[in-house]
Image 1: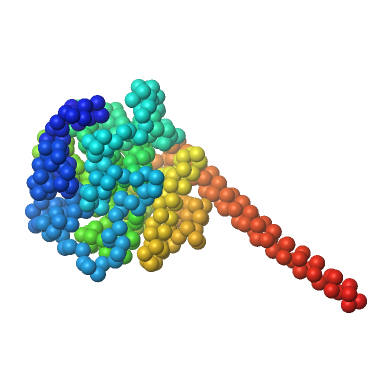
Image 2: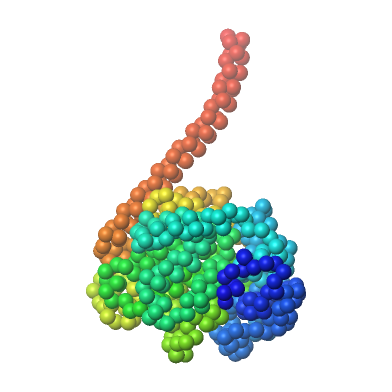
Length: 492
């Protein structure tokens, strides 16, 4: 395992250990893998790690090979129909990529739609591609020191995750989550192997798509930090068990794992195999959950626990992640409101604690409008950019453009004002009823200020557009008048 973490300093002529090449589970490798002395592609495709891939095992129908048509056919997947929509043949990896960020040709040989980040990172080293930041090794010590200082204030609602991500050289999710596990003493309580934990967190971070403007590892780190703030609230801190905390942090870190950068309706209308696999119900959330379970099993992080406990934790993790499905927002909100109206929430009850964890994760997932304006504005622009990318793809392939994703009829301000009014505010009003604390008041204050900020920006934009339109019409009017007057004077 030590070799895995010191790859950048190994000489290129040193043989690559087989366990490094084979650790990728069911990733479909190109034939070039054999150049490094690794197992043949056929052998790699059969490797399942600790996961049963019997076609009758529903748990097996998920992860780590979903983009490999050859492997999917072996585990009970129906091959894509020839008549399927042409977008099915568009690689998700290129959806949000920039032209100047071209990938090596060898990376494109990996025929996977999703979760390719680990291969990309390792192939850059194996193929002699220099690091994007040549000063990284010089600045590491200084940046790490600043990052540690930031972690001392990780419970501050003004925590700048963008700055923290820069200070950790893009490793915000790994460093933040590891720090929180250590803060809560979860490593000792659950007797977690620190090497396995580190490896698990690295795999999580790498399985987020860095090309996504919004649904990437930085978003996951931001949600994890927000979740920590909520776990620190008095009502939760006094009643949550260590297992609750462990699952809450794991769910926050993995809640959007392997997100393709498009929404569920897009997957459904393009007949994507994930939509068929999960029967058009919570498609992305089910995939995030199964992806997280796959990494847990591949890393053997919880392999020392009794099987029954481990399976129970996987199910509870899934219940938390599935709660982030925005299409089910009203269901959870109505139940939350009913509990509060009746005053029947009792956090000594395990079921009630789990429900509050679900609500906390939902709040953490969409808390960006409740952050200070400097942070909130950045997140708003990023999520809108991702929406508009999807709309552009839909228009390109003659699909019905999702209204929220249409850059020709929408703006950042319009989207954010509606999102705050109809989704964020109702949820956080109820959360404030449950947890009437200084943090809740701070969040509601930021929400109000941010909403007003977007409204003012929208008004200014509309006023500016009106002035431009008026100025464009005014010269035409003057020209017509100048032509009419001389004619009139001649006729008089």
